[in-house]
Image 1 (tube, rainbow, N blue to C red):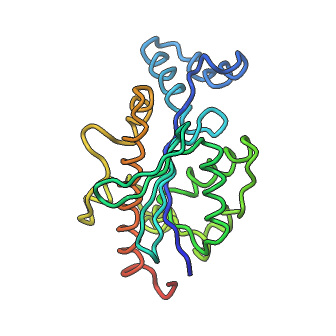
Image 2 (spheres, rainbow, N blue to C red):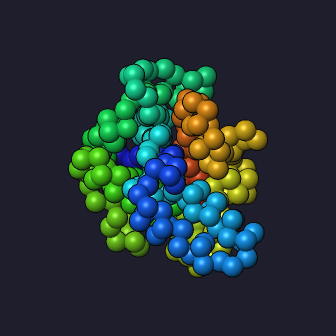
Length: 231
């Protein structure tokens, strides 16, 4: 059985790049706020959240970890195709976004099970919608039955027993299980936009590589101790 752990990093457009009607729709709740300080904060949030929507953001990195081969690799957005390997052995390849998506779905076509962290609520629907926007047809519908792990293991769903217990972020679970966290003082998921604006896409790719490695380590723990007869 081929299993692939994957994670994505996204970059949102600027609010000014959207049409007036789109801006009005996204800022509607903020503009209803009478308190100026709260209104300003909600407007900032509206712009920050643009990175979460596949119609207002693009994929800048896709990290994958082949469980059987014990091999991590990352595609990252780049106008020129380039290949290299970082000091930890993660293989990286720069490609235009549409090519990244096409290669991802080619891999998923021959994959039996994907493993994510919060993939059902973000990564998977984002990838499917973004691919449709760019004219790339997803090779599989990964948004299947929520309570089945035959095709998709969402570790956040598993560690919270499908929302019964409190949710924590990846960094929190890593600390809790003694796994090196992908987050650092300089690079975290919240810093992706700033890094991209500074032209540091390779740093985003390296962070994504650490992210999938940490997610794989969490998967190993779940598979060993909490996967009751479902391996």
